[in-house]
Image (cartoon, rainbow, N blue to C red):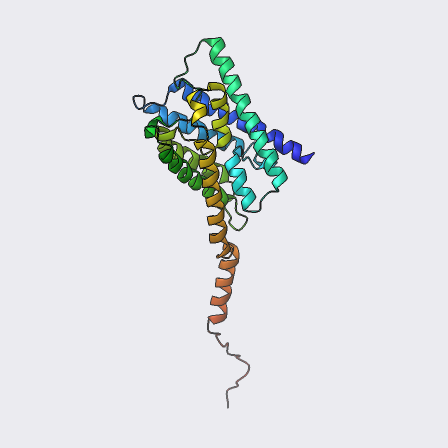
Length: 262
């Protein structure tokens, strides 16, 4: 029953991500002639993560991204069964989100400024699959490394985790939108590509493989780096103890130990 709740939470979270993130891109556009569209779309994706982190984070961890789930799996934070359940749920949520966008835009006669429901593409890198892969691998690596660091049990980042993760997603979008539209999320790419069809489907593999490779590299790298360091609290406590033991002991004089001779 607990797993079902997690999966439902992931469906809802990914649905909201695609609906508001891709929906914003469809409304404002993300071409070079409309630079403000970059910032608005980046903020939309980042703010969704912030909101969902404090909404479903306590239920499912708010992955809403198969690449993030892969990173957590490799780091030992979830079972393979849950990983499959999360990925399926995230894809369902993404497809549903795109379906609702299509319904709204078609019924309202609203022009889709992206021409493909916010689907990712390689136009920004002149159709180069290699360049697109490099962009997606690096951006996903940065994003997943941040998530693993913020959520690490060895660290103490308090309640600001969701905000930090959301701002990082905003950052990678600001850089990547002009190149690949910024995926870093296979489910987010799958939904719009399936509904848009055509060229979006032909380059979809880049936005599935790239984020998965980036997430795997981030998980391996972070696990190796973290294992070589002691937890922050333990390190501070150990340092304080060593400094205390090394400090010279001051002898206190006993006023009654010596008496003045008459």
